Image (cartoon, rainbow, N blue to C red; front, top):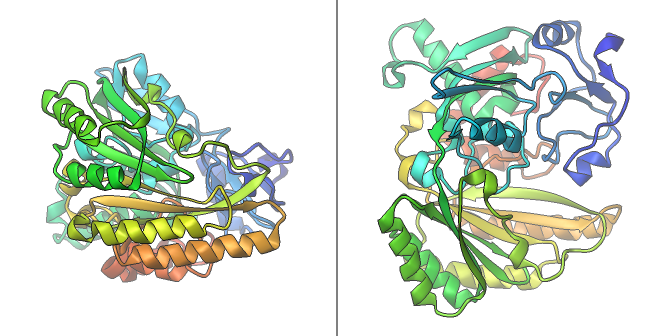
Length: 437
């Protein structure tokens, strides 16, 4: 490998497990040089990719990591501000800051720390019901396929007409594959997105009981698209409700819930100018932060409204929380529906467009504690098995080729689309440079 592409210094990462790993090395390069490197051969595989540095698989023992954060940092806003091109080495916080000066924004998650992998794997956040997934705003992609070929693609003008010529079918399949399954097929170096007018949000945070959480979920499943419920369950249960401050009906619905719930500890309601100013999610769920240097893994699921199954779900979750092997272990959820359900299933690899809830399980253990890791992963797989009954789909916000659940996650994430994805991979990543499908 050409020495000019190798970064000898271990860069800092947000994910402690990746940060503690001992990779074969770090690669920092432009798209053309990356294409040449791929054709020369990179061993061992898979090649890992670091964009924001939050994933547990942005670095691993003995493997090469492509670090996008040094060379791919452009932020180019169109003259009228309706589109932005971002390099995939930027974090969501950096993108929001650049757009803020122009009165524009894109929908991001509950944290602005992640990089552009957040967008490419779906992009679920508090505004998904109002504006759709972050992925749904993508209009162009540039990068390098796993076979070394460089691409520059634009969103198909009419995805519903993808059954035309062979060329159209191929280009539509490529586009659909990159939107939701890019980590298995290609390295994306630039994303072009539609932007939204920056609008103020009302955020209500509070600590609640299990009974109050049940009431909140029942109410939220009837809400207008301008409001969304998020919650985190650890030592305590945190409610995190976001709604458009410009929508009187949504504001009234949230106020109605606030009245219905009665007293909630640590309740605070504030209006922020946009997601760049949203408060941290999950901080109220723990009275004391989990001590020590910790590692973690996360599995995210997708499913329909819980309706009459809600009491059973909450009973199961309550038991899981009681059994958690480490104080950092947590179960959380985000609300979907609304605009996120309006995009046809045929358009992206995020096929669970009927999903109303995205719960995720966070398993934590003390670093260098092999037995603790085993216990926490057992708890993670047990919790995942239980949640599968309520949420049969998977959101691959993080991928786990190193865990025993990987194949089952792929099946639950992509279902009938998985065989076509495998065909795309055999063509665009024939030597398995990137993580396996």
